[in-house]
Length: 511
Image 1 (tube, rainbow, N blue to C red):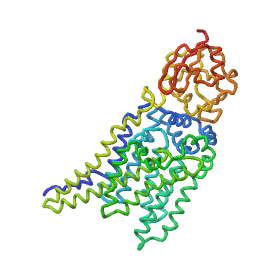
Image 2 (image 1 turned 135 degrees about the vertical axis):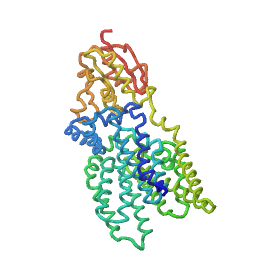
Image 3 (image 1 turned 30 degrees about the horizontal axis):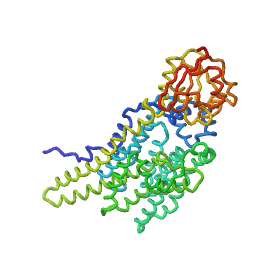
């Protein structure tokens, strides 16, 4: 008796497995490079504080990231705050998002080709791989929205509270992680509307009130974040420009991190939207991807605060991957049906498989030039801000009792003080020059600058001076009152080292 041949699907495992593993590999590749940049330094600064200090800080700043900071507080207590340790949760979250993308595509379009293709395509956009390697909340929010979409589709098939509960939990997690992610409700409402129209003859009337109620239930835990975040928005988001119509038209290019990859996804979506079979499901995925972007654009355009920036809307990429995966699945089915009319059905499957593999390869190849470029930006040291290089230089030349001065006040956004402090060895403790309050005492991300520099200069004989930008005259880049005081008491710097992003100088009173 011939042994039974195991189906290919069983050999490959569940549809979510390979997308999750591929995304895990992409995210883990060179995870510790480059060094932490200022937003990640903020994560480390907040997460490593005591729980009480963290909660007090969130009352003044960064409440919109409060849920993520709480998660990272527990994580760093166990695994530490190295670059790799801080980024691992984001890698795991993006791998989870890839798994949910595959499950969602399977539920919308059917078939393993669409499901696995969608999950693999999700790992392709350079912006996805970047934020899979960043210690911020964007990967967690993307995973939560991808999960919420999958749970929503399950609830639409059988609207019981046992199925609505995980949807509510996923949406609450996403909203607490980043408030802008709740704009996905615009796309979900369209998805639900098309579902009701498609199944109008057999529609379960409970959906008409269960979905709105589920959204309200999911929003309740997010309300404290909304109240606190609204009071902090001017300070944290004032730098985001009001978007233009041109910005909306070209937003896909920045959302994917590559215009070639974005247009490849658009082309892959065409078969799903054009070929008969599951066109309505394709439109559901398209609206899920586009309506949150349009709604955030409108709010940013008409309101006082802009939220229109690519990483805030990264959670819409899973819907694009689902749609593109549906296009690959539709093309695979069409080619297989065309070739199957001949004498060799197995050849039809082989030919269709080659076509599907080629379609998946196009955006992957297009993304290759941008994958390293989108991570290694900024200074010549290979990081966005050379905190580690500055800390290493200070540590090598450090004398006990040295001081350090770094940008504060209206330049605190650069996170130079906490960034360099993060990388300083535990036995190097420079005196904080021009600092009135430490970040912990001020319940803020950075120390508070002295109103009168002469009151906070101290009696140090040497000062390590850090200023923004590459310059041969670091004192000229400082506030006038601080620069004048230092020139009077220390003269010109003994050594000036531009690091790419900011400049390090050493002032020595004795020389």
